Length: 337
Ligand code: PEP
Ligand code: MN
Image 1 (cartoon, rainbow, N blue to C red):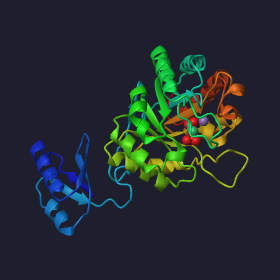
Image 2 (cartoon, helix red, strand yellow):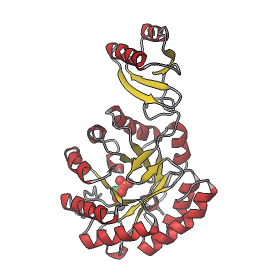
Image 3 (cartoon, rainbow, N blue to C red):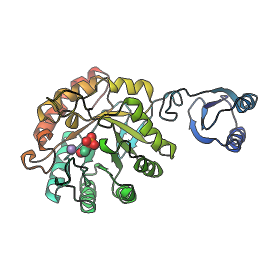
Image 4 (cartoon, helix red, strand yellow):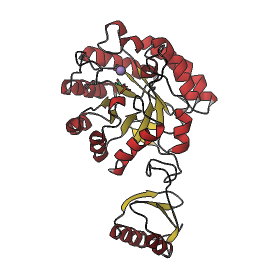
């Protein structure tokens, strides 16, 4: 439930309400807006508790949260959340572009791609050090060595970095090296992993599962938030449908739906959604037009030699062209890039 406090409430009154809630066994999540303070209270809402709360001077009203996701929903927080990663702000006026290779392969590849995506306008460098591949025989990533190369690229270019974590026991290490941690589609319902990144104090890029409904996806965000980490950016990366002409089907409608249901920012991944280089530009334009707060695009200095996801990776020159195509679309919907 949500406990909406009166507009002029003292710290003492706020402390008092929180203390009572804790005594009744509620877990508390505070949202302090400009106008009002709202307390998200997760626990069993018994009628006598609601009555008692409503009789308190500092309390304006008590509202039940009807959706299964409590903290991730607009019922709890009406104002859209902004998530800052380095110089980039997700959920603001600007479209944030994250770009880089699918996998970190070597120093030369990372440094050269970092320089070129930065020059084209990307704010965050991506690159997988732990690769959850469909086949156990495919390249699995450089692991800590890859994290070191990402860090080096960040130091050289000033770009923030995002990388995927696949194992709960690696969360601490990955957090140390990066500015944002990615939960991949295959791990969207790895609840142990979600709880672990929930304990970390690092923004999370939470990809939608291959066959996850929007509600299941928001429940995954809820897992992270329930541990106290509210800095989540959702990522629509295509879902499994009967269509075989693309790797996945980009669910464009998920973008405005998520905006209605949740206050969290959302980005789109046209690379994994389509699996095809030629579709990255049109799907990027569609995503921005539909209200996406950012795009994550795979770029490789030499896609034919990429150790993973070459067919969907853009060359640096193609990436620059795609960003130039998106700019007028962003402007048409009141955003910049
Ligand atoms: C990736 O970003 O390289 C990746 C593996 O993506 P997804 O989890 O969406 O398949
Ligand atoms: Mn990939």
